[in-house]
Length: 188
Image (cartoon, rainbow, N blue to C red):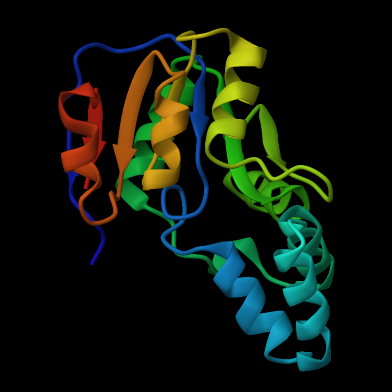
């Protein structure tokens, strides 16, 4: 069963909206999809992935997995109510950007399938777009407090510190307690 939307919307925003992918737009994590579809079928590459993780090269192992992953974005489970809301926002002319820690190769496939995003900001082989790095990248692009951000996890809290509008979607356990009254819109 999909989460039910509970809105505490203060006003309709015209700020550009950056949307997280894993756990927010889609109700899974593409890292786990990649692990199941690539690593479990090609276990001989596991030592290399572990070595990259231990030496701080997470972005590179994400790229390695993305290059090997074959998947159909239409088979992923999307957050239907949130996707419907995004469709309405895009129809009103709001700029939507997919901003994810997943690798760009995967993110562009998902964005292409959804068809709502004007751009994709994602990890690549040398840069892991997660947490504070994502917040800084979005603030650099749009300005401090000049964008909205939709996310679902503790890793999104540093991003929301830079955002002008906080949208919580499919929150992980305990997240709403941490976000408190700063949430402008909640889909749960």
